[in-house]
Image 1 (cartoon, chains in turn brown, purple):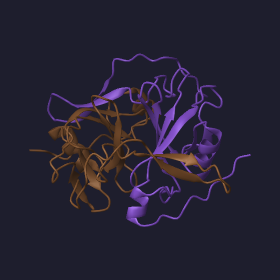
Image 2: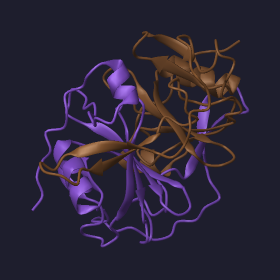
Image 3: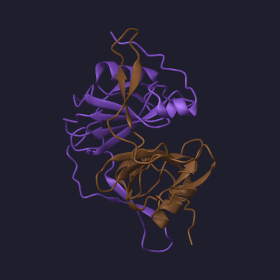
Image 4: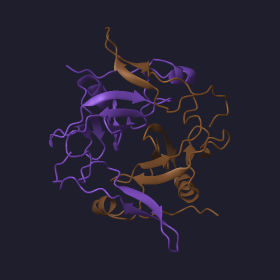
Length: 151
Length: 151
C-alpha cells in the first residue's frame, strides 16, 4: 500500500545542495516540475508536474505519476492508453526544485499529440522582417494517430 | 542589437500543439522553465527559468540567458566564470510551456556546486523504517571546486 511521504523540511543551502536529505521544493501550487527521459536512449520525452502524492506514488510503485493541471487530478501516465512509464531512476538537482525520471518508454510515445517526444518542434527566428521567432517541425514523423483519451 | 520579442498570443489548443506559431506560456511570474542538455552527449545538465527578455536574448545571441530568481536579474550563463553555453538548438514542447536548449557545454560544468550536471544525486527509498526517500550521490566526481561567483 502506498503512502504519501511528508518529505523533509528544507534546511540550509549547504544542506540542500550537498546533503543526502531529500527536501524537494514544491511551488506555491504544491507542484514540482518533472522531466522524463528515455532510460535507454537518453531522449528528452516530456515535462510534467508532480504534487506530493504523485511523487510518493512514483517512488513507491516505480511507475510515473504526475499531477494533471488541466484535469486537476493524479495522472498515472499511460493508465488508459496502456503506455505506462516504468521508472528506472529518480534524480533531483542541486537546489532540489526539479525531478528527473529515467523511464522505460516502451509504448508508442510519450506525447498525446502522436509523437514519441513532446519536443517535436524547434524555435527559429524568421528570416524576414519583422524578426520574430517561429516554429519549425523536426524531421520526425508521428508514431501514432492519437484519440481523445490518449494519456 | 537585441530586441525583446512580444511573442504571439496563445491561440486554440490545436494551434498551439500543431502549428508553427511560437506562443510560449509564461507563468504568473512571467517565467517559463528551460532545460539545458549537452548538445553532443545529450546529458541533462540543468533546469532554470527564462522571462521574455532572457528568451529573446538567447534566441538572438545564441548564448543561454536565464532569469535568476534568487538574484532577480538576467543571468547570462557563464558571464563571470567564462563557462558560457553556446546554444545549438532551441525547442519547445506540445503545449509550449517548456523550453529545451541544446548547448555546447564546453567549460568545466553547468552546476555551481562543482558537478558537470546539476543532477548528481538519485532519490531512493530508505531500506529501514520509517520508509522515507533519501538522496544517494551518483558515482560522478566533482569537476571543479567552485568559488562564490561561479555562474
